[in-house]
Image (tube, rainbow, N blue to C red; front, side):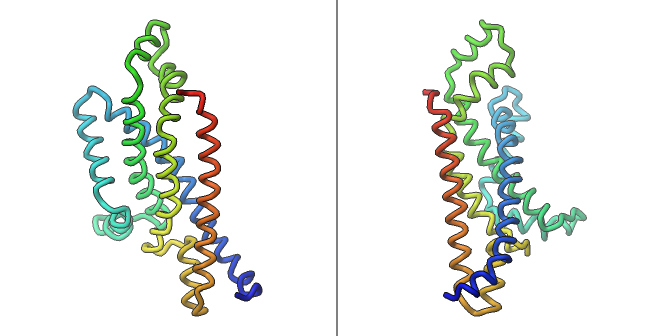
Length: 215
């Protein structure tokens, strides 16, 4: 492996990694709040809303993310709904991961004893205050391992955007491999993914320790 060649292709790989990270961060920023809101809707007593959200979760979890990407970018234009590549990817990822996070958070909320809600009412806390000060910190502690798994999956799933031609890390590696007929770019791509996942794992472990006082 020539260091000169490695230094030559690294800028394009880093550029692709930048797109991967951009998609990763904005997906998390959109899907985590969406997951919390959907999970609250799933546990609501308003049946029509609950059924609608259950249908959404069922569709997103029951079909491959790759199919959803293709449907949004290549299928929706048939009926006049057109997305740019990045927008199509972000929209698909947020909807998909929002559904998975919703199921995770629903399990977390359902694990909280109802007595805590009753105690909060005795203390005259509003529903919002109860969620913010009592429930959500405990839910976060409960769901961190599952959320962590999905976060790591998100790093790897980001490579699926290659199918719609978005210039992510994997696409940059494939272009270099096809052009130069060498496996070096793909090896570097794998190394970068491992580094990204290692960083995510480190951060998630820190977050888990931060909430370790909730038993």
